[in-house]
Image (tube, rainbow, N blue to C red):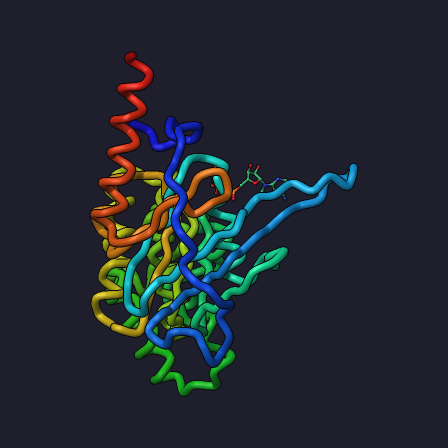
Length: 262
Ligand SMILES: Nc1ncnc2c1ncn2[C@@H]1O[C@H](COP(=O)(O)OP(=O)(O)OP(=O)(O)O)[C@@H](O)[C@H]1O
């Protein structure tokens, strides 16, 4: 069943995760990402305030691969952009380990240089590294995403999934601690979907330092995750280990099917 069918089905609200806002002194060092009581609203031209995120709290431990799920329009991308610092929350507080990197849904917005090697090396210009160090970082990052054999390839000849993996390698080469990944598999065929998701899993498994939050509406992708957050209507309604969240969503699906059949 498509997860979008559940959007109007009632959800259990969680008790608050935190009693205080995260600051440099009270943030849990073992967490890569913490958001507390995040609200985000937009104002229309008629000055009407529309809430998009409502009191969202979340906590993602270091070194883990988490997914953010929920029906279309529930606020997943908005929450990810708030965590990335691309949007400022109306209220609430955010802590995300640095350096962090946001990988877009459309790799053509991110993979821009002529060859794979040049593209992955692009972000390293600011570090003043020797050519040998640059090459070594690029090789390691491409190995982590299973793209070592593509170093000299023209990016124009890559599939969508391979471009996504190059974009992820670019973030890894810069020693990013947190990857924020926005619906990377939406436009990919099944092979490329699995390739990209395994590339992220592999890059985390090879380093305890990297954590990732992956936005998706494909329930089957939860099989690759350590933990997950399920949202509806701008709210976080469930978070925890991947199996618990999977059970929660499946129970909602069963209850929904029963309801429409009764
Ligand atoms: N700048 C904006 N102006 C008006 N509405 C917005 C704006 N940004 C987001 N929204 C609305 O906020 C809600 C959440 O959008 P968001 O893109 O975060 O959802 P999503 O869960 O990522 O959706 P999808 O799965 O379809 O990508 C949607 O109803 C969207 O139309």
